Length: 131
Image 1 (cartoon, one colour):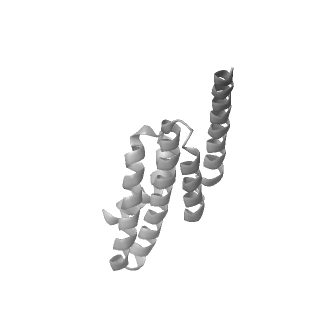
Image 2 (cartoon, helix red, strand yellow):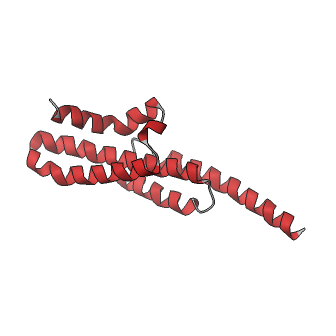
Image 3 (spheres, rainbow, N blue to C red):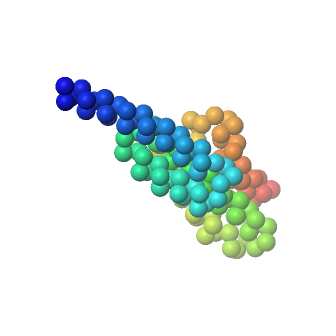
């Protein structure tokens, strides 16, 4: 009887945690959110992921990293237009975040619309530099 109760408690806990992951994703991991919001979302996802299935967690974490990277690419192209010598440290941070995201979940595993949102500024920067 105790085992059944423990299993039931674990299942309920997992369900609640999965819903919480969705709520955190909806609130904090969005293309229009600031770096601070994305970082807070990433921190909350890490806390939730002790119970939630790894695949869901990796997608949420990767999304946060891709969006943070894209925000840095936006800052890079803005800086690039003003002074190309100042862009290098920003690009290093953007590339680091992009690589962290890619290790969790390859960008190719996202839908086309998700890729467009998460790579918008990266693609723009690359088109600007490759002219």
